[in-house]
Image 1: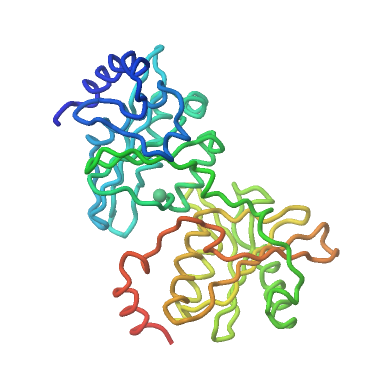
Image 2: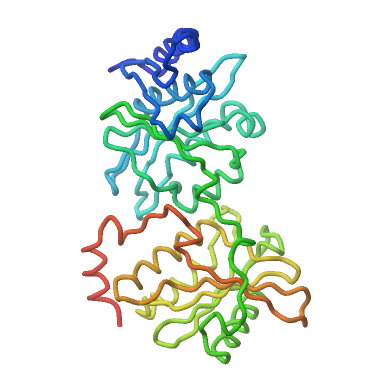
Length: 356
Ligand SMILES: [Zn+2]
């Protein structure tokens, strides 16, 4: 039980040879665990070498230090990279609360450590999976939006596997990271009428988003990344915001900003969010912003309102017709979590006290 990651990694190297010869390759004894791939996990993990690396990572993750002072949920993560020709386990973990409800997440912590160890190119090449250890049962959800953004930038995410090992029964569950990715080009194209918004309302939202885009702060953000956003609340009010960057790289995300403005007016229920970017581009809606939208849309669900409509605008040139793509934050961020899902009563009480 108290094997250090280093000791258990040696064990896995020894056991790797054995695993190749084992008739049942779905179980690898490693450290104090005999990790067993579920049937569906075996479809993703067919190479004994990968299975051994996963076992090595899960053993290392089990020992990862975390500080989940808010959520009380330990995110113990690990992966395996090559160092001097050998498998090397890297760990990461969540650390929460720095005076505000902010956190460094297990996924970002882990990839940062992998980059620290072998550099960004080797980390991108080597990291085939992220493994999470839990002493409970494995959940089915994906990472938060911000972690999805970071993993899509630092890994070969199209091939990345997300692994969960349960210390409760030693079962290993595997998902493709890509199942939680929805490109903007997949948001269905709709006519203005199909948005369900009255023409004048939609026009006002488009105008507000385009005007907002002319502002904001984009000293580091590229032109196609810089977004203007507008939001229509169920109270009939329109809010606007644009992205803002700064020297500490604490980007202020535009959808988060527009929803925060609505909340500052106690206008918690939003009907539609419209997103504009430079002509010739489809707006890239970051997964972090999708997370903000998802959280806000979960408030709608509490009051029986429809999910927020997420509408992105496409335009070939400044004076050419606008095309619309529409989805929901629920569809744009599959496998998401919100406060409404793990603290439903607290959200009920909050909305009762604060919402108009
Ligand atoms: Zn995260």
